[in-house]
Amino acid sequence: MIEFIIALICAALSGMGVGGGGLLLIYLTLATEAGQRQAQLYNLIFFIAASSSALLFHVERRKIDPAVAGLIALGGIPGAVLGSVLSRAAGESALGIILGAFLFVSGAVSFFGKSENKARK
Amino acid sequence: MRLEYHSYNIWILLLVGAAAGVCNGLIGCGGGIFIVYALSYLYRYDGEVGKKDVFATAVASILPMSAVSVFMYMSGGNAPDASGAYKYLLPAVIGGAVGALLLDRIKSRLLGKIFAALVMWAGLSMILRRTGIL
Image (cartoon, rainbow over the protein chains, first blue to last red):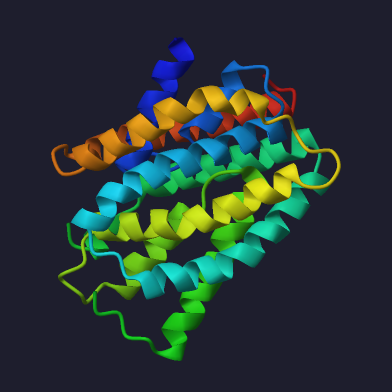
C-alpha cells in the first residue's frame, strides 16, 4: 500500500512537471532492494505509464508542436540506444554515481535557475 | 506555437534530443531538463508559449525515447527482471492524469523548489553511498 501511495505521489508530481521523471527512481534506489539497472527499468516503465496518462490531458490543454516534439524524439531515439548500451557496459556502482551526480546538478539547476522567466507562464 | 524552422533550430532540437536520449538510456530518467531549457530558449520571443506548454512538449518527446530504452534494457543478455514493475503501473496512470489536471490549479513553483532541494539531497546521498563514504 505504501508503495502505491509513493508511486501515486511521484506520478502526480511528474505529471505536474515537478521533479521530472526521476522521483520514483530515487525511492527505488534509496529505499528498496532493487538493483540499479532494475530500478532504472522500473522507472522507465513507470514513466511511460504516467506520461501517457498525463499526455491525454496535455494534448487538449497545451500547445504541443508535433514537429518540435518529433525532431527532439528523432535525435533522442539513437541517443537512448547509445545510453542503454553504455548503461549495460557500466557497473551498478558507476551508474549510481552517475545518477547521483546528475540528480545533484539538475536539482541545483532547478533550485537556483531562472528558466521559468524565459518562457512566459 | 511559432518556432521558426531554421536549420539552426532543427540542429538544436536534434542535439538536445540526443543528449536527453543518452541520459534516458544511461540512467533511466532525466533528459527533460535539457529539453525544457532548450525550448525555453528557442521560444523566448513567443509570448503565446508558456512554461506548461514547454513541459508538455518535453513529456511528448521523451515518451518514445523511454519506450526505446525499455526495449533496449529488456533485449539481449543480462536483462534486469521487470516483473516487479507492474505494481507501479496503476498509480502511475492515475497519478499522471491527476498531476496533469492539477497543473492548472496549483502554483507549482514553490513545490518545484522544494523538490529540487530533495533531488539535490538524494543525488548527494547516492554518491556518498556508492563511494562508501556513507
